[in-house]
Length: 297
Image (tube, rainbow, N blue to C red; front, top):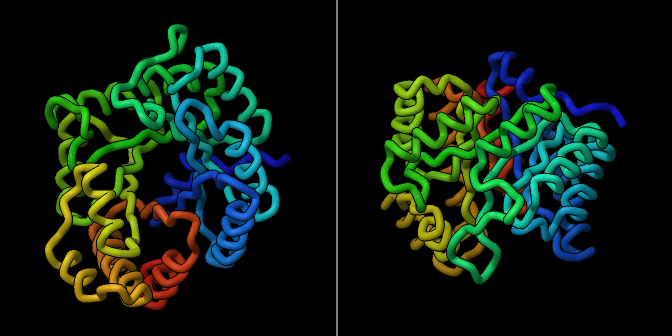
């Protein structure tokens, strides 16, 4: 298998990158839908795609299977996610080596959320407690891997304070992270404040903004509660006005995401990362509109 192009090298090109995130399907039917979405996205040529990792390693085999398909069948540079949850350090070493042997040269290193039904994160007795430890392990094993880490423009829900949240992020970068991808947000001012805070803390790696083109009002409220992200009144009103019209609601979400991305690129963001929920329509619409305006090549 040909090695994946590293995201670190892409970021050095100095152009606005576009990327999308898939999640591993739960069954074959969902897998077919995901691959159809990948086929629709392929002509749009995302610079890379990522694929998430289930709590406690529950999707280890599925994540690797579909990451390989995305890379081999569609030619996408792929960034598999990896979390600390449920794994001994020895097992994490095996997974990292497995990713590297499969040709992946990018990993998103995360602490991970507690398994479903649990509230607090508990590390494996022989595992890692923090994402910076996972970053250091990846860097130790394979220095040629580009490592992404997560950042929270509106503060990690478990962080005692914004200052401690930035300090935790700085530790991940000091351990060897190549770039930061943010949690979703709907107000660009939150992103720019976050980048300013990073720079003030001598965090100088690129910060890719994470954008979710929402589908309906109930969905965006759920995500905002989960991530503690602010829901702008304008977006809430647009989705409310759409009511039960699914197409109108989805178009409102795409329009909001488009305005976000256009502003982010205009103000110098290094690109955008779309949480597409295994759906192709959002990136297609956004790419078409941004390309027509000359914001994407």
